[in-house]
Length: 100
Image (cartoon, rainbow, N blue to C red; front, top):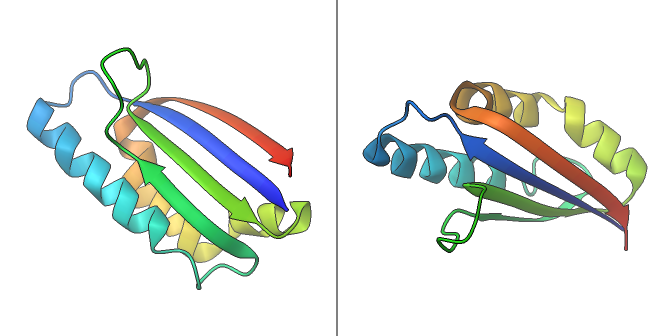
């Protein structure tokens, strides 16, 4: 099993209302990939960090293997969510992948 964790910061120019909407879209889009992407077994998107946080959104997902992670990265459904709901609104991305 592989855990794939990403932290994003949203773009500064987004209003507070826009950030709420963007976070909801990211959460809905990424959590909706379970059952569509082979080997993706669990997805949780955290959008309500404490004031001490320096990231706005966290993706925490589990995949069956490193090969499943590679497939997830290029899967059309994942790419569509990333291109429409994530990349246009984020300024930074940090990733940690590890075997469990």
